[in-house]
Length: 325
Image 1: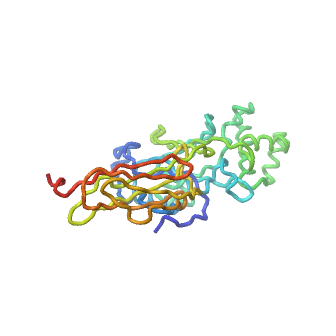
Image 2: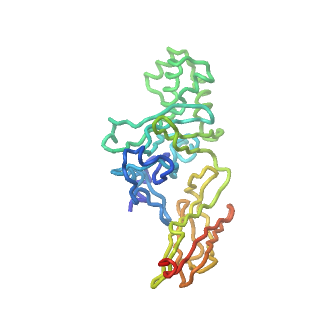
Image 3: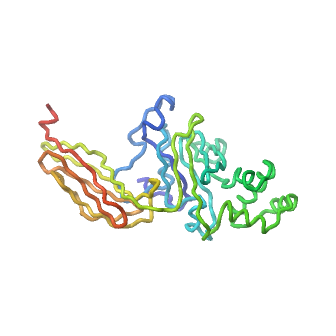
């Protein structure tokens, strides 16, 4: 019931749970992984920010891969927001901090605000509020203090739709920074609607090392991901069933929430599809169920979607007698 709550909120990067190999349970102070920590069963709708935060309430789980929601706060999706202005970008994670890179250049490292408005949460979301960081020192030859002041002015322009406070205007005068020079750096380091989209990389940091990475860039290829949640079925007095999740993802594994293509399903072997054989994507996702037919053997689910390579999933159906042997 939490999957489609609060989609009106600004969305961002989500590092979510359930990959035991990413960070061991020992590193997480012995907290056990709950089966309900991440629910990714067959569902046609994506989850909102509230659902992602609920993932971390009362449950400490390892950092896994990153998933972007429909509306990203990063500037590389400026066309999705009113006026093309980059809003806040939030990271929902149980990592200690998040590093932001623009291309191969380090921008800044961000941590949760333990005293802010989300202080009551065990894993407060991390706000990415600086998309300039140390880039001015590297490419404009500024010293650290000057670069920090100019970066603050540029981020204020991004945050407040190109409006500046009197304090920032006074800083411009003290730095002898003209409006044209400020706009040049804004177009270069933040960008506007219609400008070339940069590549952003987010790294989840745990105990000083990056344990998970997500890359955000323009879509170059589309892939259909098919996940069978129970690939080993047992047919007996009653039929067994497997949930299947379908997702349209880009070259970096990020969900494509605006993809609404239809997926054609077909089965080979002792299984049948429960429901229609053609399912449309909703929010970039869809789902179906497969049921046994009273026979044992190997079965293959074939999935076809226009614009993506065909994909398939293999399942095994065994009889009750085989299970008892």
